[in-house]
Amino acid sequence: MRLHSILFGSILSMLSALSFSQTVTYQVDGKPYEGYYVSPAESAPLVLLLHDWDGLTDYEIKRAEMLKQEGYAVFAADLFGKGIRPTAVADKQQHTGALYKDRAKLQRLVQGALDTAKAQGANVNNSVAMGYCFGGAAVLEHARAGADMKGFVTFHGGLSTPPGQSYANTKGSVLVFHGSADSMITLNDLAQLGTELEQNKIPHELVTYGGAPHAFTVFGSDRYRETADRHSWTRFIQYLKETLND
Image 1 (cartoon, rainbow, N blue to C red):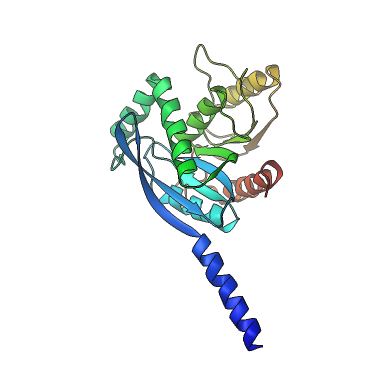
Image 2: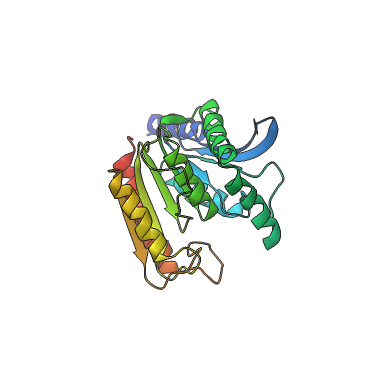
């Protein structure tokens, strides 16, 4: 029994050493950014997580930790810059608007985050990108850019395709979670996206939740809808299991 206890304790110690969480400062275009990396074990499948319009906050960190508990490494990217976490609506609009106007920069920021995850030891060859709201739009931007990832997932994200872009080069499948009561991004926008994905023969799944408004997954918000959040998260975890190799 004593030998068994010693061996069990050694295994737990090794697992604990492999599991970690840390902030990571990195550079894109010579400017500093600060992401958050968690991993439950070496070579765990990777989820690249892209934040909403208020920057990388405790919300994304909580989601990253939830994914780690499911067995996934997560790199939560910073798309605004180290220390830039806007709180006023005007500031949020300014930072997101600047990136919507400079799509090439947005693509570099997403790829820079993925490169940083790789430098941390993340398994980028077995990865999915996911994002919330603005981050969801950035995920689809990455998909259209032909990123070599297995999947692209958005939660109440922007769905429109800017002029000059298409899904012709998209390599992974696309999963969209959308609230039917979203007044900012409509069901017509969702239908248009579905048409584009179908035309380009991209494997996809579009899931809607009746009565769910924009940002229905944000804990503590008056927009939060527990049922839609729970169901979308359950399907997301199932999708990761289907899409990524353990």
